[in-house]
Length: 298
Image (cartoon, rainbow, N blue to C red; front, side, top):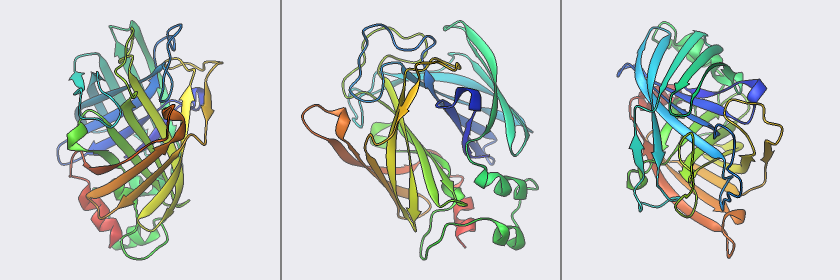
């Protein structure tokens, strides 16, 4: 189930799901917008002023999990200072799967005065077969051989890399990645902040929160991704002003193994004087799913 999920009716918003079976926990990150979109007069250097994201974690039972919502605010893009602050208890999410291809996400965010239910499906169905094969808790050699795989030799990306990744030096920011083996593509969402501390009010999340998505072809252990910024939306709504612009920069991701990666970024539109660029060393937020990656790589 570790994958990117969305509701086609509100495309441009979505959820990354991470299951940690040994811990009995589910972690999700939701990329969305404030309840009514961007405040009048608000501006952004990176992404859009109305962008918001939230994270949540909880203990699962069978096909259902109730998660505690946290808002992370106060950070700056790819910087250890000022340190972001995460405050839990901001609401509740209930995630329930009917099978490997469909689920529902119910939300109750009292501070924002919003509640509802979102039907979810996978953004791409490439990883559904892996979920079906893992329903009994084990992956046989025959099942593994039948799964779609990324072409290449040596260490090659596989869906065991579908996880939450971060750099401990900038904890509170991170990247959720999904490998689509059937199409040899890597898709990610980066949850971060603008290049200066955020100001202004926010109903959901924080005014300085930013996110972008990126997708591109995989060659072995490396992928070069085109960055897209989605702006103008409103939380869980098909906002007429929402738009996604591709070609907003480039991200490169290179994995050394199942537990480490390097993310390079070049975002020409994010800094007036020059391209915002740099490199981030990544590790898994939780190491548990590295074993699946190693199994799929054998």
